[in-house]
Length: 485
Ligand code: ADP
Image (tube, rainbow, N blue to C red; front, side, top):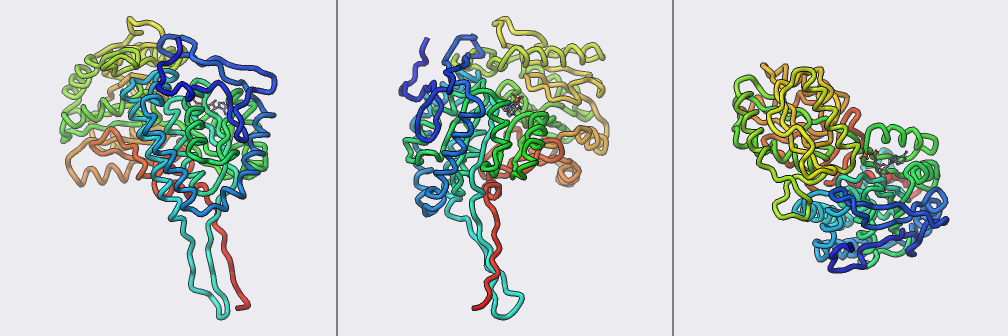
């Protein structure tokens, strides 16, 4: 069944290389399926190193003209893209929901969030300022210029196929770079639709290239090719580490948004209404498939039982349904492997003494649907304490003191997002300062915004995306000592 798009031309089953919509050299394709129904949505090219090499070459030839435009000319084109994304929000949301599974309301939310990066960086394009530094000797001036790094590559994940692309390509294009994008194989259609809109917005050929297909082959070429000067990746720590290693011989700039294992800490003085509301968003958005999703609920003894009870009650009310159903709150997980991991984490916790306070099983809808789940009395040696579940499971752990909470929260190699619910200002500052994480939500479960720097520490990655600093990742600094004047 074809998708009911207002503009069917947004559904592309071809890649964009140097302004041409093309197939793989050997004609190979792979299937894109709806994770809610397993229905075949599209067949897209399965490309490898050769096609990637051509896309990189196209980006390199487009670079001088794109970099040479006035910032406000690039800004105007990006602004067009923002407008087109908003005009096509229904189609983009339907594509996201169809290939990724999230509820349509969240799909629309993602389009708005994705578009916000294009808008923001279209504005930032005009504010890439250099500096004049007071000279260190007479007869000399010291200038600092900013220049685009050159050709960038973006390798994006399936959980936020639109936003993870625009958060990388937005600043890249704004800075004057040209790029090669490799979307996740589960969700190439959103990226291809955005490439259609990018063309319509006026991005010249070669500025936006999209290559779909074999991650290993495409990633291998992207990382080995010396023309690529920058790689921005969002995905697992394991693949991020591999890509860093592959980038080492050509000394590429890299931005890495990797895994998380977010603690959600609730103190005795928290407003429980606020805490439960924040917990639901931080945990169940995108069925728990978010790198900043709350993975461990650490709750102080005084409110532990009340918080766990209310979280379980609210969790049980969430409607599990295909994303296109009205009121759907929890869509399917991305695939069978994701479901198996969730089951494994629950079974392990239960075997070690946890009990199920809500959900706990595959959903009656079958397929990739899983019941949103709350586990209580979870011991700290449970697998779910140490690993990102990436599913709709909320394990609740008890703690006694503030020091203990901080120690437990930091007891992970990861350091992306953390959440704290408390009222006491002194405590809030002490805890925020003690947490080894790149982002902290205080009494807030939804922290992502284009205006703030997104990123992690430790095994959660390198660099920041969004905000004023996001564009720096696509800029080189050139110092000029101007003498003889
Ligand atoms: P996830 O757990 O989100 O699927 P991955 O790290 O496996 O995380 O995938 C994130 C992105 O990295 C996807 O676009 C995927 O295709 C890509 N990817 C996976 N393996 C490799 C690889 N060996 N080289 C380059 N990219 C890869």
